[in-house]
Length: 333
Image 1 (cartoon, rainbow, N blue to C red):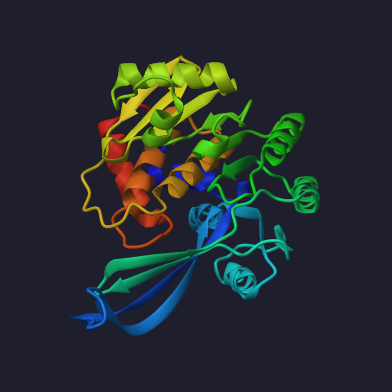
Image 2: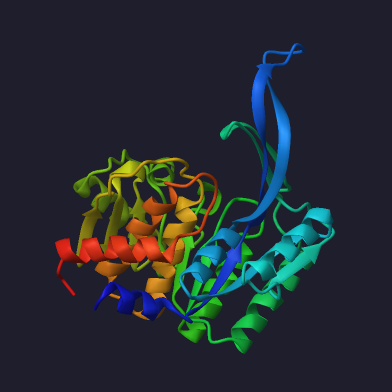
């Protein structure tokens, strides 16, 4: 297959994304002096920009590659909740899966940038688990979308903000199994071992190190041991571990294990790279691509977004060019 044919297979795949959403807010300005009140820079304010973040960035990546994102989350019944909802249509994302609640605050991460350098981040958030009422409303929304739409894969995007409780995780995985829909997760430590029976489990190296009862190195033998530990614990089918500048590791049913090194990059910002990797991996599963190609695409896409400042989705044109180079070096398809 050519890069064009491969990327075309990702198009129109419907992806249900459940997890924690947020607004990534950027306050930009210029710094020319230090404050006389404290040893901190004075930022002369220029502009504010709000971007979709968290699980919503997964939706942005799915949309950027021609897939159909169905985003399900809970936001506050506050001003920022309305801001979040209004950001969705312009990004090509439906708001039908968003539940508003008066029991929590919409998560906002405000980054103050002076002269294009991040100076400060301010977080507004509630991280307590969904209440019983919120859980019922959220699961009803998820299941109704599964009834109404031809979902090909479900992604759990966990940021430890309270949406993905053990009850939500268990209920959605059970429903996915009943319907024969593959599942993929980008976990965090708090519920690391709650994703029993998930198909694709995609932690990063730090999360593996924090959760495994033994040291883990970014080397093939050590990663295989970590993957075997995860498989015995979760009964998952595929383990994908992102390794930052070391690339990506894939272990599929112990029949295929491989390290994918990174392409040399001018790294500007690693924010959101994990969102991109799980987005591409899930789309690849939905499209039925070979796992070798799924891993290669995910690795290339995750590296690409690190070359841009802030949280940004993958660019399809760049991915196509990089995929063409990869296929020349790995003529397996």
